[in-house]
Length: 353
Picture 1 (tube, rainbow, N blue to C red):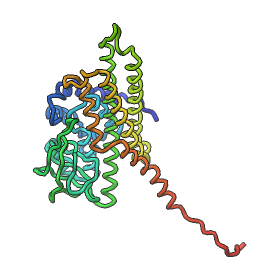
Picture 2 (picture 1 turned 180 degrees about the vertical axis):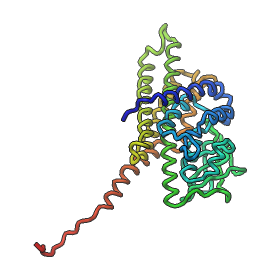
Picture 3 (picture 1 turned 90 degrees about the vertical axis):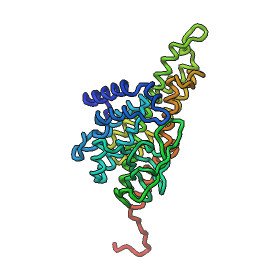
């Protein structure tokens, strides 16, 4: 698998990296708290085509690949951005796959903010990412894929990650997108994409956390020498840097599988999410620890990443839940293949030969 970037992909990464540098500085991220949503950032992302790139040309978009979306998500994570960009992209693809042209067009034109909830539910969708600011949430409810219209039926959920989370009630005006086996397939595809893009974002956040800690370890002195020269500081940072690189590699492998190995997407996406979450969790913890008590101060950048990466991941669940999905994808397929094999019956009757 060749993970080297094309010229177009490099330009894409540079474009979004520059956008986040301008529109999602640590000061802007703090200013967006406690809601965790920056309307100006969202407008800039939408104008740049954050939603258009997620859907095919026949649906009015650019037709970007999952790998392209993962590269953009990585920059999102490095900026700890205050917008439900990943969920909106996943929701847009789900609407396109379900043929919900009217809702998709409204989202692409900026008339409605859409989001996606990565857990199945029943009457109430809990901890919907972006639910506090979105107009429509794509959800899997009682074996049906629905576009839930958010009006008054939501309750904002305060959270340490300062994300725009909300519990959303499923009303009678929800739009049916699909049901039965079709709904389950569309939801699974959307969840695979969400896991992959969130893994890329977590890998980006982990790498940025390491970079913040390295810079601090160069500046902070103890006993007349930079603290980065001490093994108790440098070794955990080296471990975190290695893990962040591995998380990025696995996330991009999962993203490439959408085109190259579709049969492995579910397994790789969940695997990438689990590893990226653990890598980002540990990297931000090590980085915050290196800052000492200063790292807990609201004026320090590392605490933004420490809180945000946990919030991003836990709207789905702990890494063990993703690993359960890996096991189901791998061994469930094996069991299904075995059950389809013809059984050989041994007869005691004499052979015709």
